Length: 411
Image 1: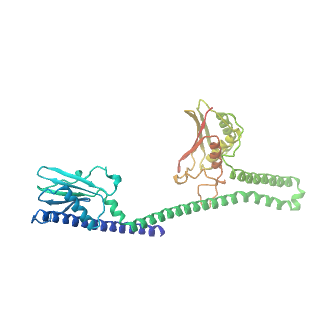
Image 2: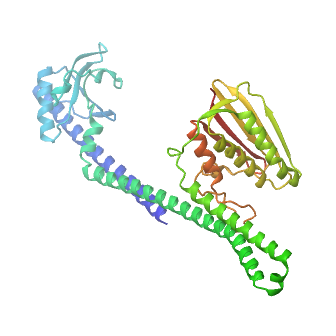
Image 3: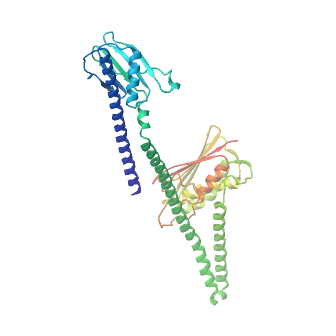
């Protein structure tokens, strides 16, 4: 509704500014024609010529002509023009010329400029419309006519400027509201996922603690140790989840500290893939490596870089509805090492591609929490890659999987 109202105001403003401009232009044209008519009448009186003055015409927007029977002296013509323009309150720079159609030439042309800074400006009157009859003509050209008319529209210019400022402010506010809405959605999704992730171990610990209060369980050492083990494992899982959120939530690319050492990227990828193979076997998936880079050496932190590869593999597995098919390849481009992690997952919509690396952002799935996570994995990946002075980008299409591309500097 607000956008429609603002659009109507803009359209109305444009309409009335256009109308006001046309009105001022018509007034200016009429004053010029009256002035030129007065000049011709005066010249005819001086020459005692009984011809009429119907030869005043507007040949173009800023170009006016008047037919006379003889060539007037330039000084006289200029004096008469200034008198008439003063009488009709015209104080704009003008060019005048005297044209002889018999010889097809301009006998005289001059610029009368009220701005001394532009006295050397070239004459433009010689490039205007051609004359179409025999005789002598007085020609007038106003090079700054548009600016002159705009000066008469001060109110409309200021009101238009105010409306433009309102539009800019309105656009800023709308953009701010959309960002706030997006942040609110991300926050709500994060809270939903956080609740889902933390409720399960808490519930399991609660049920196990309740079971321990049963005298029959206390008397059965095997069952007792089983519940104690469950509580211990779930508590560890809960602690890891909380630590992960707190650590990654406060992660800053400028504050990350590394153990700088020479790394073999192929070695790290191979070990990560070997570790991950168990999960692939459980899902009946396939993980293939195409490590073709001739130089795989980089400087970085082994632990963080291993986590980057593991996070990308974890995402590729989680977001594959069928048996996951993952391919990791490396190539060299110039002085850079390119790592591609390709999967056959659900893919990412174009509207989400620019947001997936943001903290806590997850592609909206409504209230369905079939994929666990807090929206921190890709944020962590990007943070570590940027800290290694690398680049990361993603190519994805819904239903056809995704390809994450990392570009690092070789040694």
